[in-house]
Image (cartoon, rainbow, N blue to C red):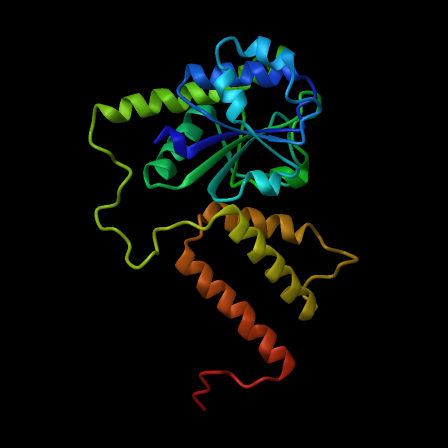
Length: 257
């Protein structure tokens, strides 16, 4: 089950922190590490800090963008230490562990995303996340080392997973939703939907590119917390497609006049 949870490090500047994160992961039973445009990797400094977790480093995947790192993920959790202009659903590490386990237990892929050492994740990157995770450290000295942050979140997931082994799972509903309605959309499916939604809103002039009013970030937040299923996505995409046809004056394919 833990193999369904990946750790994503974005634009890490110090290779030693990559090694420290790999060690923290292996301590807690995690092995799936994805690096987004690291400044220096592979590196002897990363190997030295990994201290026995070089197998995690050897298997790590390096990608150019966060979008690539999130392919296949149906739940994305991004760490954030700063207040943002647009509030986003916020979890503490323990709550994030419960959410991660719930998705991973159902076979969904989960990404725990960590930002740059000096600046964290950008607003645009955070908007790709379903939830933000805030570690409630001492406000007088709240900045955590990257590897320490990875340790905190992976530890909480492991503790929740161990607790789950000793009792019947509460993650499953009394009745499973039928015909794929329980399968949540992946990150790339959501991104494709957002692009489609933005095109339609521009077409109907609901979205003014000169005065966007944070509309797309707010809609991302809305749909992100809804955990949209594949069946629901088919409905939403169908509505958008039919809207585009109506704009062009095309007849409704199921015309019931």
